[in-house]
Amino acid sequence: MSDFSQSNVQNLLLRALAPEAFDLLLPAMQAIKLPTNFELISPCVPSGTAYFLESGLASVVATNSDGESVEVGHVGYEGMAGAHVLQKVDQTPNRTFMQVGGHGISVPVSALLSMAQRVPSSNDLLLRYVHCCDLQLAHSALANARYNMSERLARWLLMCDDRLRDRNLPLTHEFLSLMLGVRRAGVTNEVHILEGVRAISAKRGNIRILDRPKLEEMAGGSYGIPELEYERHIGFPIRRT
Image (tube, rainbow, N blue to C red; front, side, top):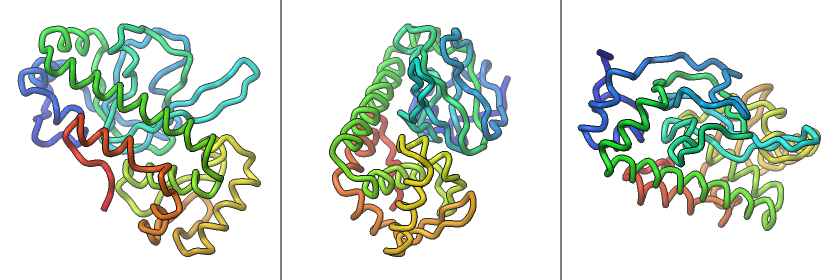
């Protein structure tokens, strides 16, 4: 049996499960290193494994038929990669990979679905998490349509800050351009704007949060509602204070 206990896992979803549900998953849990660029969910391939992140940051990326890509979701220690299987969908055209390396816990999809069937309260919890993912996507669409680039960048940096729990964010300009769906040169300009108001400092491959309240002020209404919904439905806060 695995050496995990529900009191010492870092993943909030696993901690929020009913104890009997956690015990059902325990024999199937495996600790796994998740290096940068590790592919958690391959597009259009049946998913055999779900991943509960303990650290690091995963990106969910949508790609169209022309090969254009944009990030549509973040996953950190608050969530899981492979949530589509909870809706009885065995595969997705979206790709999920580790943008910032870390570690996590892998669970076979068959064990996860068996647990969900046997413990309805935990099935409901996981479906509420899917709702939170849908809401994150909805507010990304809202931000893209109604907020300017500086506000959107501030929002994404806050979301990264929530999940990485480290003021130093190992984020490249290439990743930021993928997140925001803009050219790299445009990202560089917006990073300079945030540096100019002393909200962040940026070096090659790293952004340091200097003034989180300033970032929240700049993000405005583009940030916060999905995070509060997560707390309401899952029971743990994810916004850094």
